[in-house]
Structures are given as structure tokens and as C-alpha cells.
Length: 388
Image (cartoon, rainbow, N blue to C red; front, side, top):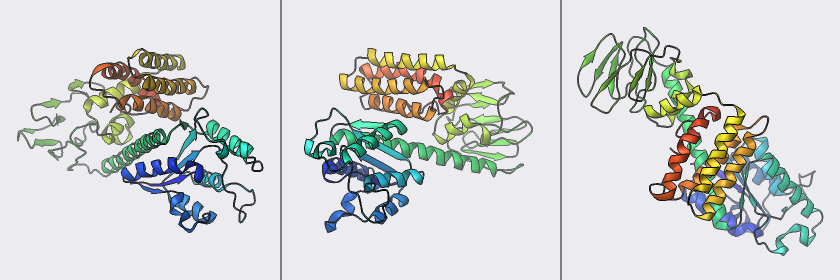
């Protein structure tokens, strides 16, 4: 459960903020919004707002066409509370999720500072929105429900990624603490790596490891002097002649990194709860060096596959939009891979909202899987990151 600070101007975005608040609460998160302050009928104290931002794990910013209340005290730059909350989150390195009202969304002119003419607030909210659009990966919304869905999906993905990172760190600690000669390890139900030549076997879930001897709890057979792996299915053991397992095959690959603690692909597969096939796919993704032209071509194929699929028009439009954004970022001289990942996550997330077990959605997913797999090594994500 994460502590999430929801920031927005008050009356114009009340319904929108409430939808996000309820969505995050249903997801078992501790959400803090303006409603927690306004019971007194007064503007919330600036220091209280900034302190709550500091205590939060995440910041969610929702912006329409109002700049917001500008407190007089302790505010030499005369910025609105809404902007100051964002600046605080940025300064403290909080993950920021930004949502902007779409320019085409119907909106009351009475709730637009540029129309009501409150000082220079119309100019300031316009400049602030432009800054957010240039410096952050933003999402656009038109309705309260659309905003709640976007926010819920973004937070869910963040939690998922955060859990993977925590699991990865835990896996590394467990492996670092192993003892030579006699040890026991349990990382789940699969084996993802093997010790260097002459060392003990590492980590066989459900088996007892003693030195170089492994006793299968299922078959009660004892093997000596070899690196033997019981894959956990209960019907076979895999003898490793070299140093690397791919799927159900034995590969003699002496050049593969032997230390699980430093093998990113294998460790990510462990943390993600993947299987040996996922490790195989990750290794393939890492092994293939892609040029920028090849990356752009793959992204173009992804977009074309989405356009050709017989999906609902709204789904196609949204997925293509995110695919375009991923391609635009990948085309930059110094592409930010994290931004490409987030756009692809959003494109695939839109598709996965459909029933992907049958029909056009299933066909599209089957077409997209090998394409996104080609990009996982370059992007630095697990093979099952987008279609886990």
C-alpha cells in the first residue's frame, strides 16, 4: 500500500479528484486529497500541504485551466499552492504522475483563469501546463471516469515495478549470503542460475542442496559430481553439461555470466516470478544489439499491427497514440528508454483492457509479443514486462 498525495485546484476539479481518490482507496492505497483539509472552510495551510507531500510515496497532479490559490505568507515567489506542491514533490524526488485536462474537453469558461481575468493567472497556468508537457510524461483526460482509469492504471504499474525491484534486491541479498560447502536456498519454483565451475549448485526450490549433492524431495534420487537440476515439474531432471539453461534445453555456453547476483536478465526473471522460458527470452533480448533504425522500424510494425487489428475505434486510437509517442522518443538522438517503456506500457495496457483470450485482441497480442520481445533487451526490462 502506498501513500499518495493528490494535488489539484479545488472547486473546478472536485468531481475528478473524488473519482481518483475513490479509485486509489479501492486499490488499498492511502490517498490524501484536498477534502482532508477543507472541513474548516478555510484554505489549507501551505506548510501542512508541503509536509504531506514530503510524507507521501507518490505525487498525483491534476491540472485544468485554473492556477489556484496563492497564499500570502511564506511565499515570496507568489506561486499557487498547487504549483508549490508539485515543486516540493520534484525537489524531494517523488515519483510524479501528471494528468492534464485535454484541450478539446468541454469546460466552463467561468472555470478558466484566462477568461475570468484574475491577474496573470491565465498566463501562469498556461505556462505551467506547457512546462509539465515538456518535462514530464503526461496523460490527458476528458471525463472523471477516464481520469480515474488512467490514474489507477499508472499507479498499479508503478506498484508492480516497485515490487519487482524490491524482489530483485532481496534475491541478490540471499545469493550474496550463500555459504560454500553446504547451503540451502529457496527462490520459488525454478532454477535460474548455476555456480561457477567447481562450486556448489545454487538454488533448487523444493530440493535439498548439500555441497555438490542434490537430493530430489520428489524422486529421492541422489546425484553426485554433476550439476543436476530438478525443474520442479516432478517428471524429469536436467543435467547441465555447460553453464546455462534455456527452457528445457541444455546449452553449453561457457561465456555466460555465472553469478546470479550480477546477471541482470536472470535476476529480473526471478523477481518477476517468471519461468525458465522467460529467462531464455530475456537472454535472447539482451544478446541482440539493435540500431536506432531497427528500433524505430519495430515500433512502426507495432503501430501498424494495432491499426490493422479489428479493435474498437477508441481503443485503436489510444493505443496508436501511445505507440506514436514511443516512436517519437526512440527517434531522439539521446532517447530516454524509460519514456519509451512508459508509452509502450500504456499502449499495451489499453489493449489488455479488452478480452485478450479470444478474437481480434488475442490475434493482436500474439502479433505484438514477438515485436516487443525484440525491444526488451534494449529497454532493459523483463521479457514478460508488457504481456506478463
